[in-house]
Amino acid sequence: MKGLLTVAWKNLRHRLPAAIGLVLLSAALFSGGSLLRAMVRSQTQALETMTEQTEITCVVTDATGTKTGGINVSDSFAHKLRGKLHESGCTIDEYVRDLRLTAREELASPERAVLIRANGPEAIGPDLKLRFADGTEETCLAGTELVCCVSPNLADLADENGMIRLERRFLPPVTLRVVGTVIGADSIAVCPFDAQLYAEGSESFLLDRCSFTLSDTRRLDEAKEALFEWFTVPSLTSASDPGKAGLLIQDAEYTAAAEEIRSHIVLLGRLRILLLLLSGALGLLTGLLMNRKRQREFAVMRCLGCKRLAVTFSAATEQLLPMLPGIAVGALIGVAVLRDGTGLADGFLQMLLYLCGGIACAWLLTGVEPIRLMKEEE
Image (cartoon, rainbow, N blue to C red):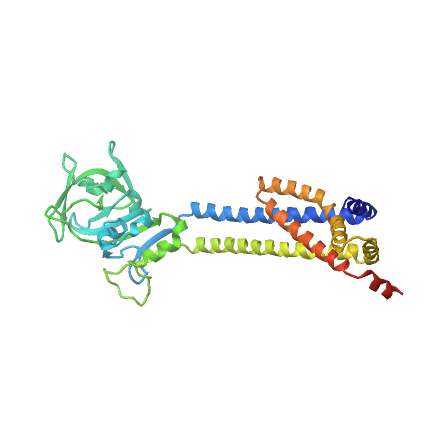
């Protein structure tokens, strides 16, 4: 065996250009696998980052989907989104965060005034701003206190204690404590969404606006399936009904971007498979180019008593030796690109397939019987 290795080394020295070519080829194959893995990792991380940073907004509409304001749907949908109907099997609140709710009610007095229920300053929209009095937190709208913010023209109606009386059209009047100012419109009063305005019991009302953000974009498909068990897909052919609410999930841009990244990952995965197959084919082709004119030499070696397996090993070794420095260079490139050794497995697999191709070629070329080869030459 030692003699065969010596012969392989001497033959390789006489084929210096081919040896240099094999060094470059092995370095390219080894580093190519690492680079493809690095690209797959980069795309995967980009998808994960985009998913974590993307906020998908969902807007409740009427059944036709034509209204996002003045939707006039039952406040039971707010209860569903807030997790108040678990006993009915509705658990969609786990997919909801940053819920924004408003309801509008026209008042009998002050004339032309409107009372807006809101669960936070961000719920009333960009056209209106709330300025709270000193010592008052905006979180008061998330509670049940009988407080309100009013437009400047209504502030003059408050008494010396800061209390304002609002006459409702179909329910008893309510007195609220003014804690801030509404900027952007006249004759507006904003109170907490959950304020108990009807002292004798609970009341139902229609939602004006409702929107929220999905709690986890990674569970988008799961959230869609759960939400559409309770909401309908908006359709122009649907009749407006307070008992039916449509839902618009604004995920088109995210979905398109995510699908594009996933298609890149699939393509890179196919390229990795192609590179593995190409490595085996290159090993076969390289072995053929290096050894196709050496069948007589192989025949002589077998006449001298060398077994076919030993001759095959010698020919394959001539392919393997120049690969070693190439593998080292490719491994260094892979570690530098990936900053760890995760790409080495791909590189070694490529080299193994390349070597298998070379061994297969050498096995075929050493299979000619010496006597038959001599007869053909005669």
